[in-house]
Image: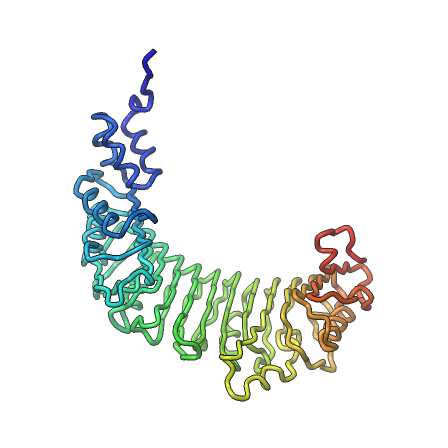
Length: 428
């Protein structure tokens, strides 16, 4: 009994939709199945090119070139190009991007990792029509040979998501011109390249809701970030430079800040006073003054100890000097506190902070050492003064008797490492 080819009997629109779900390389191979399939793939509105471990860069770019010559879809929804292995002169990135823009593309993703580029890569420039795309919504550019040269008449009226990962800018103001001409931008992800031609990275985008920023410049090189986006709701920063030019963000909900510099200025922290959830990764907090966080509900501090090679003369003594517990430095009124890697000593002040007496409900100390007297004294002080405490989780590295410590909140629950895997064993 002959086999019935039910798939080939499907309508072209359905077949095109099926082929849109697979990489373009696989979609193109269907042209050899029969005359019925010869041109179906050419109408696919999504083009996705990725090389594999069995292919070299030349094969990838040959496929891109040939498929674009045969492609007939009037509108292109997305173009994704990812070169994993090698970069060759056969790659005409400008031609690919220009084709996509001419076909009203909504999403472009160009990813060429910098570690696969030759020592003297050719400079890649984006075509002029790219900078006036009226349809782009999502854009990802990741290539250290790509030079972003933004003209004065650039405009991306519908761009909402932008990722600039290890790209190079033509001059100091190219990135600012780009962002200034994205009136609908809501999400921005930036990873700075160590030689990206920008000293002050300026982000002034009123529409921005989420911003992720990583500066890979040499540590302590003080490359400032200037941030003025009052509508921000989510912020993530990992930086070795100057954060003193961050303006207030009244709508901020969550923030992660990795600011790994010795003796940081607390000016940047005042811009986060409206945040609801804050995770700080710092080298020290001794230089901070009291800051009010009226909306803070969850707080986590990771005090980072630099490696021996990163220590400056006299810094080790400074790092291990007595550091005031952050309860005294940050007057927050939230109900949750997450705290880990406290330094070896701290200053107990005469007055108990209000956050302990009237607000703290959840306390977590991960990687609690327990071998040093100061650490135990710190936990003892928190438990003895947190009148509203509901749950205290202390996860020791080396064991130790924590359950015998006095708790002023008689209804609180104390969880240790052994209890965390068996909630029924928690102490009340």
